[in-house]
Length: 347
Image (cartoon, rainbow, N blue to C red):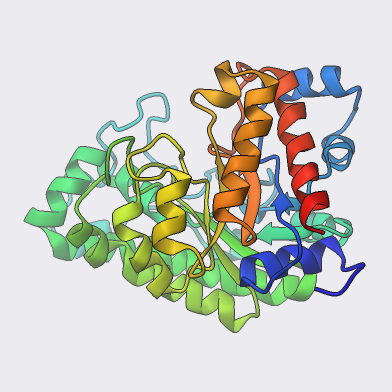
């Protein structure tokens, strides 16, 4: 990178693995209950003021999360019809379906209800930061909700034709919605950020063969779509996903987030050994133990250790983006200070 490169250019180079000259930093997307604590500790009044104070290089500006982004006249949200949000994993509205024709009457979302105005405004006003955007495109979770998680996994084996039909219906909506959004956003965004948690603490949430059949074909299609529009591809997947990281790379993923540090086989030294140079990394600073229970010095040491292993193609960030109120604010400060030290050290 040339001296004086912008934040946007620098993070693009980090994700492209083009010797950016420094690592990046993203605070993540703190839990709503954490924001009052952050503002009190850092004497800030807005999210943008806080991020600037901490030297945050990245903004996640997702059209799907704006209240006015989907304007169904009956008040529905995307794929919400018939779901009991208070009972995660409960039986879904498509659980009793047996044939693709059975899903025809479900109230599938409609493209004509989309509204990008608020999101595009914030992208235009984002300033010199790397902009993650695009629909969250959490189709794995949507399909699991529509069937109910247990029914979803059973039907992968008992009725794969039906699972493919529902998956395609969900993904085709996201594909067309992203196509419209990408055309509207143009160069206002840098990376397509989408999320499907494929891992648990100890392994994949279902078999590699099931993921290969029902999930990865659409990872490839979404990655190809984003690249066609000139965007980098950043995939979010919590949990232990080491077994399929090579598959993610083959499908076109440029950067993996959030690197759940204490999940099996997700430690930084293993990721560096197996995938460094083939993938950029974002996350990896443990929120299960170190950020929550460690000292500020331990947090600083961990940032430096992980950066040494995963850099320079690395964005310092928590191993779960939704920082909880249980994380001491002094440790958040230490995270940002160590990320800044990494920037100075390699610049």
